[in-house]
Image 1 (tube, rainbow, N blue to C red):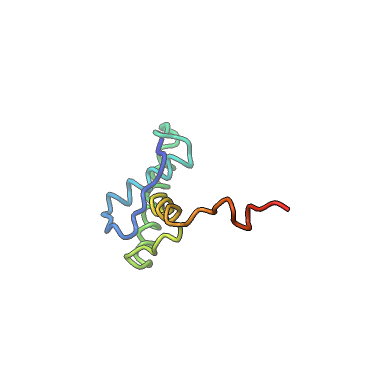
Image 2: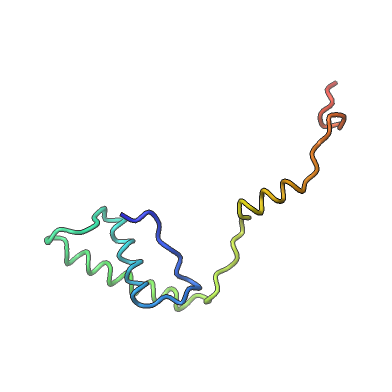
Length: 96
């Protein structure tokens, strides 16, 4: 069973990449890594439909993904290191 589905936008995915992502998605939501013979047709139909819709979606979006709005952990830690630490005599730490 897949743990995560990779982002395809901005990667110039092939039809095979799209089909593999659709297969991962169908496996995840159905709970089957391999369907039974009784469910095979519905499983394959779902993969084909999701592949087609995914291709349409990516075709209508800009090729370059928008920048991520949250900072990476490395960037956050470097920002925190740059901020001055409060000293013991600051007004924020003084008790009345």
